[in-house]
Length: 490
Ligand code: HEM
Ligand code: PLO
Image 1 (cartoon, rainbow, N blue to C red):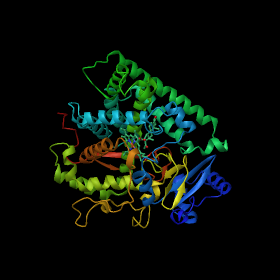
Image 2 (tube, rainbow, N blue to C red; image 1 turned 90 degrees about the horizontal axis):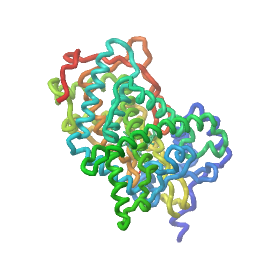
Image 3 (tube, rainbow, N blue to C red; image 1 turned 90 degrees about the vertical axis):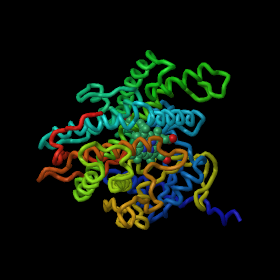
Image 4 (tube, rainbow, N blue to C red; image 1 turned 60 degrees about the horizontal axis):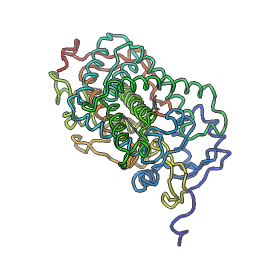
């Protein structure tokens, strides 16, 4: 009977040919594309060995949902890898921490703090709009010069997450901000090098140069986090919770004073390391993900001026020119919302999510899975599945509109830009608010183009811990009536 239910493990790649293909394809083929192609030979779910670890690749939404939702808790573990251990002091953060009471407690605390911000007087919406105004002013002043949007977009999203985490922000040219740009890119480039699955340490081709760079960048980041931590500790008050770091400090204090209760510093792990690594996660995720989506969105809008024009017409009709867009407009701007969904489909920020680990012996579909197996959900395959998406490489926001073009829909179950289940993205709501507000403010006031003769932005992603676009330059031209910013912050 048993053999009827499960057929043993998934089809397995021979180990040696995989090494060969990984090494030869490394330069011109990103892992998510390679893993998508290997389906043709091995089926939608297959396994391979990476060092001593069994890795199972899931390329279809049915199995992906079984892993993330139906068996979410069984698959809620995370692997330890050389680079993420370096980044997070052996998994003392949220994203790269294994399933545990400590992980659950930190996730809950951060979630609570973010929710509180939504309502408070310094609401997230106000913070984002302040940064959107400053961003639009800077871009509008660029005149006819071509500029790399990346530093300005990054400063805007950094300031949002800085306000949330530390109640601080950066001015243009702030040396601390310039340093942050450097170390964060260094971390994105190197943490990604083993694509989170420990391929290279095993093959011993992990270049020491990269590991050294990662250590350097992590040490600069840690000094910055430590500085913020000391400042907060110095003027902490039980009566006022200014930001996320205060929320974590309060949780730490109450655990320290409450050694009889269930929540003690030992049981939930509220060491200084845990606090630092947790804010480090939110800070890093807050900056790198949102800025990446904005860069992809603008790159696609430049390739598809008719989409940009239709969003601007929608904004003109719904918001007009006398006030800036606000969160309550979100429901009335379906075409903009559909465009955001399409950007998140065609260029998912985390094309392989973060690897999951089976916490017990279990199964995926008819395949048995052993405890400790690493599971990679290939979101790229889900979002580019030809059976689910007609012409998947075509950028078409219309996919997410109903037949009349007046309302939104999710046309396929093969769509999970933020993951799902126990490990679903913790910043989904925040990210959606930011992307909506930044894009609507920009497109109300400015039109993005490239100068005649300049190349269009490349749409080929640079694979890493986030899938980033290659650097490009644009012209930001004020629209009629917006030649000089005339809306002051309220
Ligand atoms: C995890 C996507 C923005 C914080 C994830 C995962 C994905 C994702 C796919 C992994 C889910 C899994 O492993 O199953 C995105 C996208 C974003 C975004 C597409 C922007 C559009 C943010 C922001 C924050 C954030 C702004 C910070 C507030 C996190 C954290 C985790 C996570 C902490 C780890 C959750 C855990 O392991 O328990 N995100 N994210 N993300 N994200 Fe995001
Ligand atoms: C980005 C570089 C920072 O310096 C450190 C950092 C922390 C959290 C990571 C983030 C980096 C990349 C994007 C990640 C995020 C946690 C969740 C998020 C991996 C490495 C995603 C998209 O899964």
